[in-house]
Length: 290
Image (cartoon, rainbow, N blue to C red; front, side, top):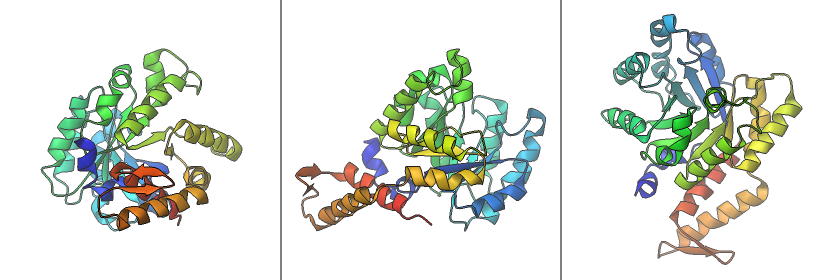
């Protein structure tokens, strides 16, 4: 049922999400610049990027920006504090009073699907469609990730939160140590047919290292990668954009489905149904590199 409901919300599910650029909540000047970088998603961070004593200041500086830059092409997201904390509840309360909401909300330290449903229900008091990203960065969240991924039709993507998750799992935040966690999160996202993003590569001036890690993420099933510096955008886009062969197949799938009068189609001897169509639409959207 959740997957079929998502098919009616194609504006949320066919967006490009190869690159996800974080901007500190106390630096509103960087938001405008970030929106011009070509990143698919630009996210203001009022959680980890803001000290506890400055949360109110970050809200006052950041939240009005979504109205000011509402016409910007990039998807505009907001990373809030855990909804199980007073800071997170204050974030939600302030959000619901905004003139213009972000395109998406990033939920942090999520442990259960109920947390996601709570936020989704609150957001539905507003007429706008708002996507939900979920960061998996707790051991309990990792255990419940399959249910979290399908908690609500507004969930559009999962993240892995490597630093916090590695601390809970009592391992170093290395690729090999978190391989199981990455795989489990990718599996849950694929089953729910949503996007899944890997953590930023933190060395700014190491393009080859960024490319290797991005390729490894893509091979494992990640659909995009977060970043903290705009110089990483082009490399990430190159890795996570579809090949010409994939684009050609997606176009043929879409054409065959449009010509079908039964709701089914056959391409290269394979039966094509609606979930495959959305995948093809995502491929074509990702191919539209600006």
